[in-house]
Amino acid sequence: MPLFPVYSRFNFTPVRGSGSYLYDADDRAYLDLYGGHAVISIGHNHPHFQQKLRSQINHLTYYSTSVQIPLQKELAEKLATQSGLAEHQLFLCNSGAEAVENALKIASFYQGRREVIAFRRSFHGRTSAAVNITDKEAIKAPLNKSFPVSFYSFEDLAAIQKQLAQRKTAAVIIEGIQGWAGIYAPQAGFLQQLQVLCRKYDTLLLLDEIQSGYGRTGNFFAFQNAGIEPDLVTMAKGMGNGFPLAGVLIHPKIKAKPGMLGTTFGGNHLACTAGLAVLEVIEKENLLQQAKQNGKYWQEQLQAIPGIAKVRGQGLMIGIEMDFPIAKLRKQLLEEYHILTGSALNPNVLRLLPPLNLSTEAIDYFNQSLQQVLLHQTTYA
Image (cartoon, rainbow, N blue to C red; front, top):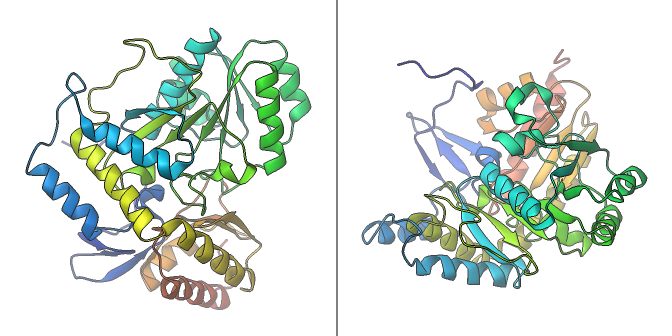
């Protein structure tokens, strides 16, 4: 049976991983600076992560939420301590798109409204409601367009206020940093004013931290730079270090009703064990501070490399913008220097989302490799 051909793939087959490196069948090491879309937060095959999962497998791998699962409460308590949102409630699910779907559903339940405000260049997922609030028409099927969505540019507060004043909007959703677009961060002042407007017009503020959360920016969540408190926060990717795990953080003013949300696999025993292992490693190895320090060092070094147009990002969420499309550059970095990087909606942006425990030696190797490629390549047209 052939696979449905919807993916563009590199000619590279990893067979094992360790830390920030992947290895092929010939045991060649490849520096992973993309983490499988920011999923690998604590490194490939971290020993604590492996040990926790092996131990849980020996006891119980799965049962549904029709029984008591103490691991869910343990994960929630650990998350409360590290995230800074101790009063919020936790709903566990499996993927970022599912987290967004549930957050939108919660907002609509709470407000009794169906309109949503989102932003230009946004990406929130590929499932029905999530793709409807994603700013790319080509990936939307007709049935996805099931509720009204308005897209605005960052800083367009006057137009946003005009719509919110009609009191028909259930939620405003915004990414802590737009990753898929090419690493674009909303200004702290804009987020603060957005929160003021949402509260004034009784609209829920929903922060999508699926890519920018879990320590990637040096804060637990990117929005914490602005000192705001969202009503809803979606999480996934780095939450399980490769094991499917996602969640929604829900403000205490929003009350649950039996059957309001549900999931078969969300918050299962293995998923919660993976989530606990990630939080334990983040805390023990002080990975938030490491991401902040190494991200600052990395961006300072990148700024000095000739041929780079712009460097954007926070912590270990970095976009390098060139004056040309980067597809061939990515291929050369992989084939000649064994470095795996990411692309973006902006074809000129190289996206870097490595494990949070990336070493400065690995950063230096990438910088030297990129400099050599740019020095000896006259054109990528």
